[in-house]
Image (cartoon, rainbow, N blue to C red; front, side, top):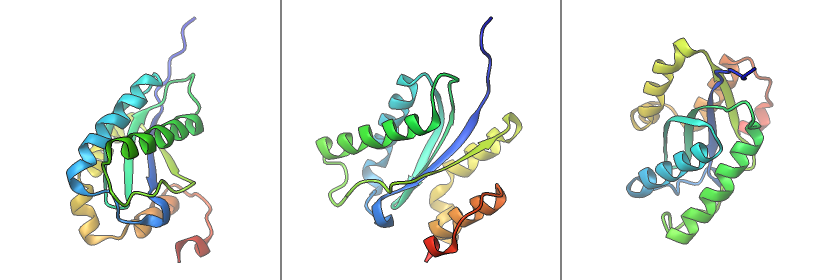
Length: 148
């Protein structure tokens, strides 16, 4: 028997100390590289986008891949890619953690539009507020001290 799954994740992580180091001119190159990493892990990237201090990845997780392993590989390989290609001069790495939230197939188009619209969205809302909103919407327990 074959395994069939549909597991759509939105993965969100920030630069170390939320430093605004991901300049616009090289972000698309980084996102294309990350999409390749995701495909190489047998997962399906739908959309990757972000702003100066964080990014969002919408992807389908292959049943043989652990989420933590995927995120670790994306972070490690993209850090090397950024440094080797000198994409972002002041980039100092990624934060240690990440957020990951699941969505239904019906929510996928809206989620992709949301991620594609990050630049406009963050003209109105700070990334830390967005993170708090995700945690609350998905009923994830968190400690307020990490948002100060």
